[in-house]
Length: 132
Image (tube, rainbow, N blue to C red):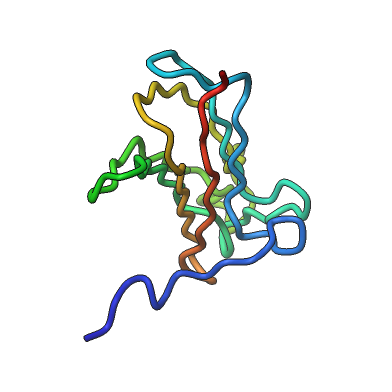
């Protein structure tokens, strides 16, 4: 049986423009809000053209000791400079970055997936521990 896990690509985001970067702002404390920044193309910019773009980033949380992963959010990027005048002639395009706020009750792992219309699914993760 084939699995989606067999099709997820991973790499160092400092070398590969498709990997979603996860950054946590501020200390993480049980039951308190903390900021998460997600971005594709932090070190090496992704082109984000009509023909080649990031469509979405999803954020998940895997609490330590729990079986199931929790989906925290889906962030879609809909504008890719398309226009009736042709590809890349549009007045706006999205930068595939998002800020969100999260509250967790246990340490665990943030997991991000991004989808490039040409290069498929990419994954990254970040372990979250509580500040003492």
